[in-house]
Length: 125
Image (tube, rainbow, N blue to C red; front, side, top):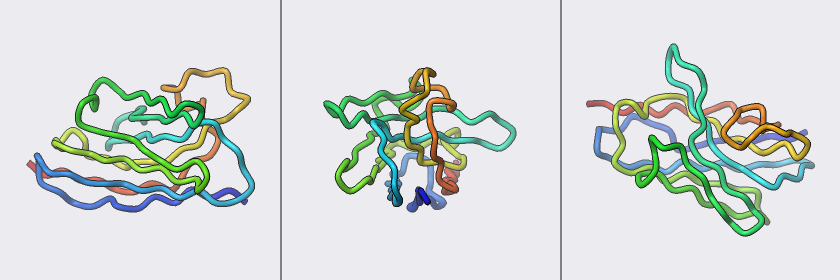
């Protein structure tokens, strides 16, 4: 059984920093891992992805320059360093692993097969 477990979410003031972590366990193989988020009343949105082959990364425009994704393929772990947090960054952050058979682009949620339960990030103004 594949499980993705996030940690690190909490309440933080605007301008602050936070580091989210995710550990995957179980029998799976994925070429990508990443993060999505969902704010109350809004659709889930892509945040960042890392590709194990070559280590390239991609970010949503709204977090470029502020967030940084990293990870360890051998350990199936991925992290999200979030700096200069703003109230609009508030939401539940989900760790995801890519579906090798999906034809959807990386910024679409359907590109990912496994999802964690999510960790709450709240940024106060």
